Image (cartoon, rainbow, N blue to C red; front, top):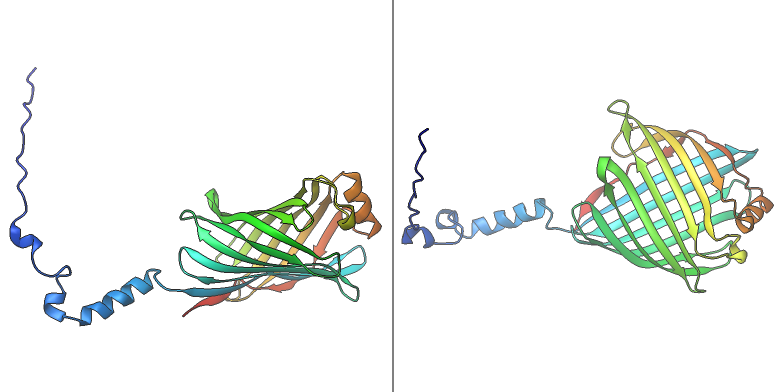
Length: 264
């Protein structure tokens, strides 16, 4: 059996002329006009600040003879790496007092191509006891296109809680989208003032169907199961307010995929 002899191929150095001249060869022809073109190219590929407003949920629902609503919004401003991120969520019953409200102001820093590290302040105004929290979490796109978010909160009274959300867009057609959504809340201790028990304090499993009329608006219809923890403190406090574990059927509501980002 014959063997092929190895041959060392000489590697020649580039000619000296190859390293001479301007750093950008087009400058030799177009001069300073190329600088503006390079700046435009850099901006179009992410080197610019942008802004986005997303109304993720704007829904009304019918549950146990109580008509309720939820408004979940996010907005951010910044570049590829660092952003100022604002989040707000409001829940309540029509014709009754507000049940829950919170506002978050976060600094978001990209820790990879798919996830951001977020830290900042969360404030819970009335109707419940006021709380101010330090927030630390991650938000991004997990494998198989799951949008996930997980955050830990430390309140001004030393209470440690956490919340995690996950949702997935399953396209039935180009415009009809089925979205399963899971949300859980955890607590490291009993918080009697807020009706929260240690452990799994609350959970929600939902299925939303939306029709994307345009990139800006998508009416939705959904079913949602609110699951309360077996923790006595949580269950007793929730049931005292009439929030027992039950099926929740939101009516057709307007939800927004988002407003187009604007450059600055």
